[in-house]
Image 1 (cartoon, rainbow, N blue to C red):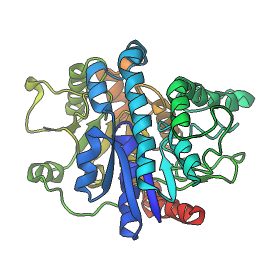
Image 2: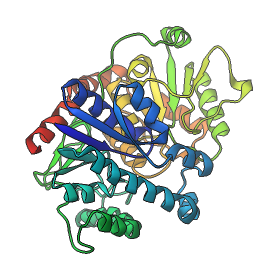
Image 3: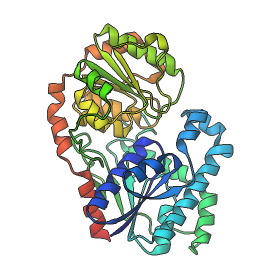
Length: 399
């Protein structure tokens, strides 16, 4: 089976596709992965054939941050041109590879146009359940509370976002000799890559929407290749802190708040600075603080006492799978959804908004966390899930 995978965004948008690509390749499929420039080297190092897409989310976020206001200000100068380039290059990648099936992230709006041109199925990956409407909860990131019968209406926001790029999509239609107007086949399956251990399948979802579980590679169980990290983790009582791509606000103040709260609670702090969400001043460093740009969640989180994170979908799953209780500090989008979900399930504290993070609130949350033993059954169920295998079974059926 020839598979083209297309994604764009932060690490949480790319890692599930990378895991699926590696699994598909091991299973003997012909796989190509379309990613933006900042992830090309990572994919190539994993032995995956890459179709580079014309964009760089990391550079954009480092330049302007992640706030909605910053995105609006930079829409004409930066966001729109980059998205147009990504959509065009994704379409070209499909024509070059001639796959049997295209699997794409919701951001890759041109994927279904290319699939229609080639006469092949397109499969959508919902990294967050924001595309398939349900009455059971509003679209994460659109509304913060249940609004009952109106929940389904909130899912129209995604379609409205797509219309922002209607001009370039119309041009791509023309380039692909597709009708200028009217509906096209669209995706034939939507794979929601969320663990059923965290989210029960809504009763009103159609059969074409499938919960596969997370697309991830099982932890190897091997020690980290970082000797200093190994010594640090072996000493125990480690608090992990990482906010992924959330470059926003005063990163140094957040670092100080976290480390001071950890020290007051008798914990040692492993900080993943990510794309700029946390910074650690020189006067805070010491034997009880280890700073890295990124860490391997699979090898690190099972050895941490707790995790403070932004509540991205991928990180949320990694933390629960690692058996660590969560303190979610959401910044935007779907992050409050995951924070509330973990709190309701007894897997973490009530979320603390990034704008309201203080040492006192953080210490209170740390004091009320569930134990690792309480989380262990859910973590074990999640580790037993084979999301990549489930996804590939759907693709095989279609192709």
